[in-house]
Image (cartoon, rainbow, N blue to C red; front, side, top):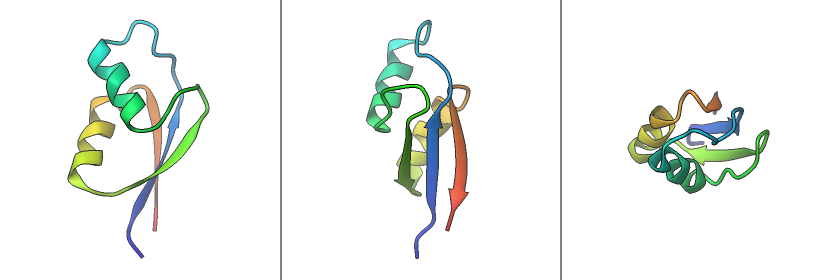
Length: 61
C-alpha cells in the first residue's frame, strides 16, 4: 500500500499570502480542524512544505 499523509488545517488563513491560501485550497482544506488524506508524491510534498506552519501532518502507511 502506498504511503499517504493525513493533513489537518490547524491555523487560520487570515494574514497568509494569496499563494498560501491557494495552496491550502488545492490540498482540499477549507475549515480549521478539517483533515484530508493525501497521496505521497513530490508535488504534494512541495505543497505541504509551503504551508507547513498552517497544517499538522501525520504519515500513514
